[in-house]
Amino acid sequence: MPYRLGVDVGGTFTDLILVDEKSGSIHTAKVPSTPADSSIGVMNGVAKICDNAGIDPSGISQVMHGTTVATNTVLTGSGAKVGLVTTKGYRQVLQIARSYVPGGLGGWVIYNKSAPLAPLSCTIEVDERMGADGAVVRELNEKSVIRIKEAKKRKHRGADHLAD
Image (cartoon, rainbow, N blue to C red; front, side, top):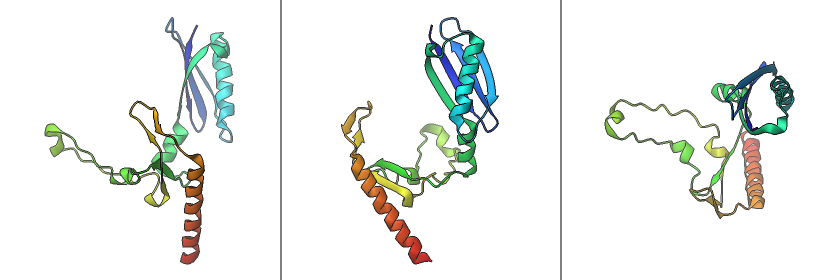
């Protein structure tokens, strides 16, 4: 019997919900989060909810994961410095972030653009392409990404040294 599992990892607790796809019955569980390794809290929760429901974990056909920890990190801007790898030709898409609202809404809708998570200086373009259907049109060359990343690192180290 297939089950769906939802997991939300928070700073204090990890919450789980298990749904029996056939009967619609629902089971919930709450376990302490384990900030040093959130997978431990998740696995403790899976064991607890499966035990409460009387099912084997192999009966879970789908897992949906959310994390309040990540959401809060994004909202407060307290995470690590990140970079963005994007398809060649799309480097500035998040920086531009234009929007068009058709019809009568356009006169009163205001879009306050927030700063992107990765600044333009930490954005690299790679020569790859996926189609609208998700099929690979031009395969990513992982070695070229590593070369670009290393060159970017050297450039930033040099700029930091010059600023000192």
